[in-house]
Length: 189
Image (cartoon, rainbow, N blue to C red):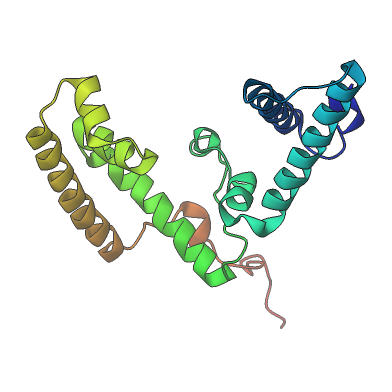
């Protein structure tokens, strides 16, 4: 009933988190010697704590907690990439945004030239996976991880530098003359 009443305040997952936090707080209170007089008292205490958690969560999402606000506006990286979804920084100027998009596309295209191990290490670093986690998953030593990461960063830098020196080939449509052609015009006599 509480989740239905407050459904306009937060997403369902956040409301469930608030409800579970309020319940755990009440359980902790009882374990430390607290007591309630009747079922109504328990219900009122639960509602009071639940609403307090909802207000806390809304304050965190509205900007009091920069991390929570950033996470709320974040896009899951699993949907970014081949499907065409772009990562957008709403605070960047248009020029900076264009340059960042170009750089991301360039990284995506030159990263294909790295070895699979190099892509794996760089991908794990970008995703926040630790060296120990990747080494345990792949059966690598820390030294192998370090060497592959070092070579991957060096090769990626070199590939990016080479890509910046190259002028992209024009597609056929950019070679056409703009506007009408005048081959069919007959000169006046």
